[in-house]
Image (cartoon, rainbow, N blue to C red; front, side):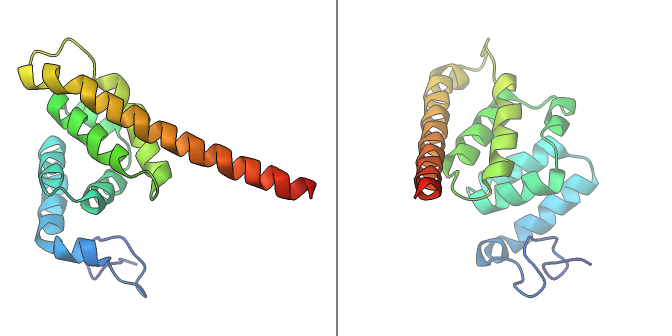
Length: 152
């Protein structure tokens, strides 16, 4: 059964699509059309242009595997933007985001012919590393807490 009132938005039928996705309803429809036409890189460019993490996560979930980007000969700018936006907040949809980050990181590789990429790649990678270290620290704290309570 379809959820989200036919827009393909995430959420159960009882909950409906999130307010964030509803605010981007026309974009979600455009993304569905682009995916139907196999215009994967263009779909990601549109989603990234929305500057909405929820729309981007929705698209990643809809596409399923990051490997489709390799098949689409995706530009370094798209990879860098995906890394930056997906790593921005790893507190929700963490599994999906981490899967995509792990698959995209090796694709963002020098040489960067684009001057904008040369100037920003290091900053983007540092931001991703910071986000990942925060997730690791949070996971370590949770594990320590669980161990302490098991012993008690």
